[in-house]
Image 1 (spheres, rainbow, N blue to C red):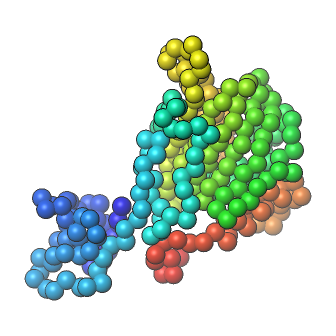
Image 2: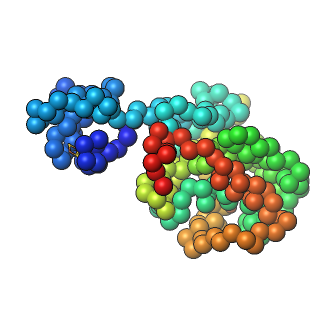
Image 3: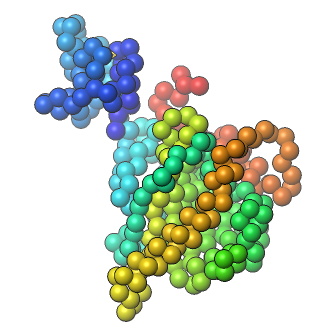
Length: 270
Ligand code: FES
Ligand SMILES: [Fe+2]
C-alpha cells in the first residue's frame, strides 16, 4: 500500500488510474509511479524525474479476511492472534453498517473505561479487573468475568493493540469464541469498524449448529456494542474530572498520548 498523495502538488492518487504497464498514474498532471516500488517513473512533460519522488510503501498483511496496513514503514506489532489456529476456526468478518462519528481512539477507550461496564452495560462483575491490567508498549489487556443482564456468563480477555485494534478471546457460558473490532479512519473524526467473530466446531456438531453459535455470539456482541453507539455519537471529552474509579482509563489516555507516531512524515504532520 502506498501513501495517497502525489508528490508533485499533492493530488489524491486514488482518483488516478493504473496503467497497462502497472504504473500508478496521477489524474492531475500524469506523473507515474512504479506499481512495485512507488518510485516516480515518468513525467509526461518530459522533465527529468525528481530522484527523491518516491511514495511511501506501507506494509500490508491479510488476516481473517481483512487487509491490514501499518501506518509506518515497519510494523511495531503483529496482528493479534486468537487462542486457536486460524485454520481450526469457523470465522466471519464484516463491517459495521454505519460509520462512527469519532476517532478510533475514542472507541478503543471504551475498553479500559471500567466504570461504564457496570453502569451502561449492567455487567454483574465476578472479578476485579483493576487488579489485573497488563500494560505493554503497544497493548493493554485485562480479564472480565461477569454475568450479563441477558443471562450469559462472559469470561473474556479484551485487549487493545495500538490505538485502533480491539481483540478478545474468551468464553460465553463456558464455550470459547473470539471477537475483534478493527478500526479504520476514513477521515479525521470518523471510524469505519470492521469485525471478526469466530468459534471452534464442537465434536459431533453440524456446520449449521456451529453457524448458529457464531450468529449467537455475534448478536450478543453487537447488542453490547449497540449500547455504546449512542454514547459515542455525542461524545465530547474534556480533561480534568477523572476520579479514582477511572484510573485504568486515565492510564490508557497516557498510553495514547505517548504512543509513538510511526508515519514517515510524522515530523511534518499535525
Ligand atoms: S499532482 Fe499529481 S501529477 Fe501533478
Ligand atoms: Fe462498552
